[in-house]
Image 1 (cartoon, rainbow, N blue to C red):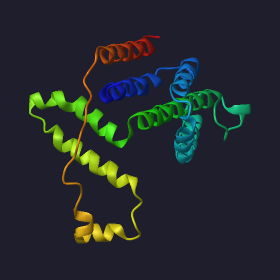
Image 2 (image 1 turned 180 degrees about the vertical axis):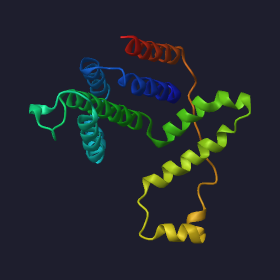
Image 3 (image 1 turned 90 degrees about the vertical axis):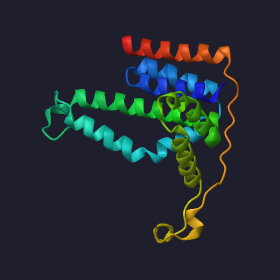
Length: 197
């Protein structure tokens, strides 16, 4: 699969999750797990890192959605709020699964290549997409290594250890195949189906 095709499929899946109910989310989760059997480990790691975000999202929606309070207690969340909060939390978990699939499938270099392929048509309109892709590559490279304590002070002071970066960025894009066009059309069709249903 072409890296840009994978990125477009990921974007379509992430957008589609906002329109899916539990049955659609279950199909998406099953598809992700069947696509990569080892995906559950990084997926669980993403969910674990986002546990406070999930809890905050759930509490905000459960308490701020109008409806009938749980057991008629004035301080309790509403039934409708808990239902909406649970659905949104399930959608966020599914989106994290899509993100785990994308990183597992493409890796850092593949993601940069995919973004390059996706943004390349904007060059016809005068946008400097090469600069954006290089900056994204540098950000992703810096995210791979944990900075030492006090590194931000050295960066602000202009320490030469932090001023550099790779002098050359190599991108490799395979040729676009007919199956890539079919996958993009299928992704668009599934997104449209999720929106309309």
